[in-house]
Structures are given as C-alpha cells and as structure tokens.
Length: 297
Image (cartoon, rainbow, N blue to C red; front, side):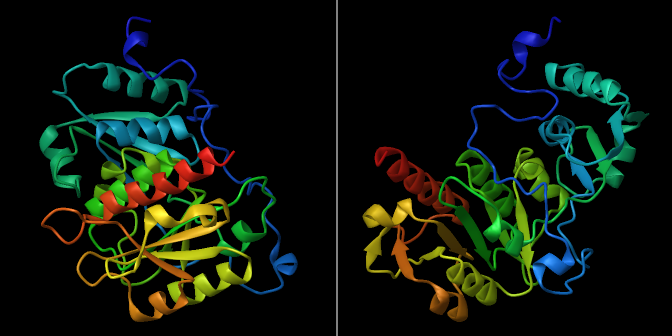
C-alpha cells in the first residue's frame, strides 16, 4: 500500500502490536485459580485501572494494534484530514470489524476528556489488572524490573512514566488504588499507547505491596533526592530483581514507603536545580538499570 513506507518498521507484528525484538514479557496467560492462590480475593475489583476512553491518534492506533481488549467503537471527526496514521487506523478498524462513526468535531470535543483529542477517540473495554501475587510467582528466565508509583497524581506525568517503562522493558508498573491517578484519557494519550502493552498492578497499599515483593526476593530501591548513594552506584544490585519506587514531585516518597525500601538512591544534580521531573527521573533510572544489566552479560 502507498502508506506502508510511513508506518512502523516491518518487524512489528500487526496481530499482536509487539516488536519481536522487544524485551520478553512475563507470561501470565495461565493465572492460578482462587484455590491455588490460597485466598478468596475477588477477581473483579472496584476502582480498577480504567482506560475505557482513548483519545488521540497514536493512542487509538496502539489500542487497535495491541489487540488485548475489545474496541467497541471509534469516533472520528468528519472534517479530519487524511494522514498515514488516520489511514492506518481506518484500515485496522476495518480488518478487526470495529465500528467507525463519523461525527462532528464539536461532538468529539464535547465528549473528550483530554485537551487535544486530535479529532479521534475510541471506546473500549477497561484495561485488565495484573495481580501482583501472580506476577511474583510467574516463571521467568530474567530478573524482574518493576516500577512502583508513590503518590503521582498528574496524568501527564504518569503517561510519560508508562511510556518510558514500556521502552525500558519494565515487567510491570505498580499503582496504589487510592491517592493516585489511574488510566484517564490524558494518561493514555501521554503514554502514546504504552498502556496497551504494559502489565499494571493496582494494590490496596503500596507499603504492604513492597513488603510482599521483598518476601519474594525483589530488591526495593527508592529514588530520593536526599539519598547518599547515586543511581550510578548500583553496581551488581541492578542485576537482581528490582522494584524502583518513584515518589511524587515535591513530597517525594511517603514515610512508610521510604521505610520499606532496601536502598535509597539519588540522581546527581550538577546544575542549579535540585530535582528532575518525575517522568524524566523514571527514564534515567530505568535505563541505567538496563545499561548495567546489559554491560554485565
């Protein structure tokens, strides 16, 4: 097709939405049943991840490419200009038999919950949570790399964190159920579609979740501006299973979360400012762990 040269590289699998050269995700396709897990946790939980409404061209395309959940319908502005991304969306939607509705741009803007829906939005089934307990007991051939979010409430920041976590091959992102933003349309758009591929765990309390990780042999490393040790001094620790904990801008890590950390590290600030945006800090820290792991092979 004429648009093929404008699409993603040919090594991207259209049926799965994944590049076969991407870091391997943990296989959670066989989840233990309730009796195997040894508890009576409900399968369906209130106040889940969300993600039912996706806005923006890249986010909608990744929703279709990911093919991990049902897409109910796509709304597209009747005055939208043709582009490779729009043509791609329409072609995949047709292949997947997803209903496409041509509506006025004003109707899309009235329905949208992000600032710039770019003339397109989709309605889909909610994102499925990954149970932390299942993640920790799943067979794996590489050490885990997890990222836990402590008190980040800005949707743009969370979306950017999720985007960098997907890029760095993070196995799962752990989000507290309360006092934190989940997957809003702004988060989905800011993540550029990363939400369609990442494992995400929603936990009742982050301190107890960190204790559960530690019991499973995961090293908990918190980013803290006041820490004495630098992220660049992790050394062989980076080769172990790690959960990197990110605190909110300003307050940083909460007291209970800080107390659960095995190690606190900082990102050296060599200029006049004292800290980085949390999404930038996430990118630097996760890729430093990836760099150390690759150099140690």
